[in-house]
Image 1 (cartoon, helix red, strand yellow):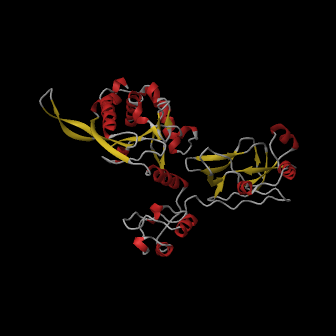
Image 2: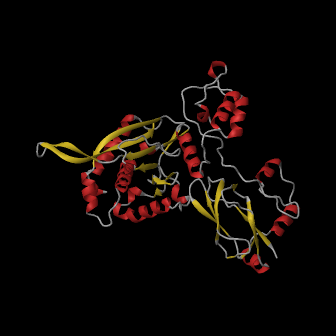
Image 3: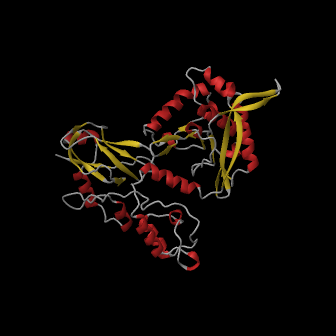
Length: 410
């Protein structure tokens, strides 16, 4: 019978590998077209590897807990000739025949092949170790700016970045960190408890490293929440506070689109749509689903869409489309009892707006000429200072605060 290879699919434009977390079938199981047979975790979500046709699982090479690059061989299906004709799926036999009629691949092509077609069996590519290896180390103040080629090569072998060696006291000229210093430090850390970082943790770490290459600044402003809270109590279903913030930011950005620009070379690229992400805490990280065209929809229009995105984010069921293309992010770190913070925007975004926990405070009322209790929270805006200055950030933040005093207009 014809044999069809099961390959790690391309799960998104920016996804190069995925970790197998569960095998949903066993050898000998009958499967149907588009049936999810392997559950994998990428740096953004939990997804499924599905079948291209009906068949019987004849071999499984995927191992739970191991990461595989896109195109890696995960197993085989036995299928019928009729099924091959119906679906047009490539079989081992057709691939081998095609390979024999094609010219020899170049050295670059060879690096991209994940299994061999030059004999009576496939040769599985070794499993891919997570992109960033080695142990994270705490940030310190010692170290050198210059990294020798030898040191750079050793860091590349270990998957380390400059930030990872900043805690090492260098013994080289001018305090330079040498390879010997690095090896001693790694030997020292070997006795420490450690655990493998998850794909989610590594994705967050990589995004924050890239974000921090820009000059980021943060401004804050207290805002009264009583009107928002009163408006929320009158709604059914009740929208979350984050949704009010999301909508206020979209309206303010539409009025001041320069603040949402993105600097590319000598051009500032302006947003073509006011799609805004919302930070959702998940196990071992944060994911940011994107709410589309927030400026064109009222809060009542957004509730169902927002709730669905947040629910799927918490279950790690977002698609690539669900979490791409945002121009800014909103984060409600007040849900953790925090009153202030300095959130960091994603590398592809210029700013992020956060809000802290609301606290009861005495606020002076001109109407009754006395202090009255009111709920106040801190609005925090972090932005790329190359694109936005303090004045522009302040005007944006003040506009968001003003809109929150008119929740019925949102």
